[in-house]
Image (cartoon, rainbow, N blue to C red):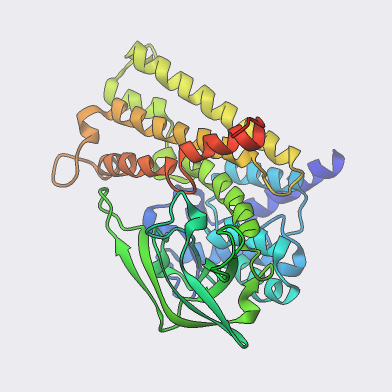
Length: 394
């Protein structure tokens, strides 16, 4: 315990000395750092903050130092997170490489793959996207048809992925492909890494009802992928896919903590529009709903922490389905409450009469509806919980 308190004091001192003042404010959308070959930094402090955190290994605090991490224990990493939250420090780097691919490479990757990719992920030098879903393989992911045909020292890959988040900005894609079309559908899948700079890879953004285009179609045509980019062995992709989905679901479960709507407490927003009486929200029904939401969010965060501790810093396991299901449903409810708080001022789309933060509410409310679809629908999560957590029969 004394060692942890010493670490807390040291971490607090380092953060106070090294986190620029502008990095202690909510990040506007155009200042969120995703890194990559084409990274641009609107705020120079964002680049400075990333470099300082990466040098210390604190973009990936629990990864081994040999791969660019901080080598911290889960307890130390939690303390670091608490101290960053206390100072309102921004996350220095948002990354699918950190949230999803990195943990898989640590478990299944070869030493050469770890040395090649993990330090670049930790430093924000490479940006990854995920090639899983296909037009005819969404919830039935194992029905994918993208083919990778072994040809000597490389695979020849052809296929079509969809709902590929930020593919148009990514440098590399981690991809599920079919390498044995004669095997049972779960058995003939492999997990490979593809450089998006290959001329046979192209993307097409998908415009959403919210007006944004965070997802893409990704077309892969006659792309030669070195055998060295195969992770975990031939036809072992489904095992890796399930493990990566556990990490993805854990990440999506925490999405509410990273969205712009989480910048200010609901009670503060409600007082702005509904008014207050003796320091409390004037509308008693709305006040009760907000209190219940805050209690549920607090309980959820504590449950996430308990699940992490029980996993002892390892893979989240089937509990990720529970966290993903409840976290996304909780996040959708939060945006319903935001609309209730702001009333008609939350219904603006463009034009005069609405503040910039009000124009975001409707878009973010619409976007939140996708939380219970991406990474596996809520119905899929309930099936996983029934089978793998409760042990119920098919």
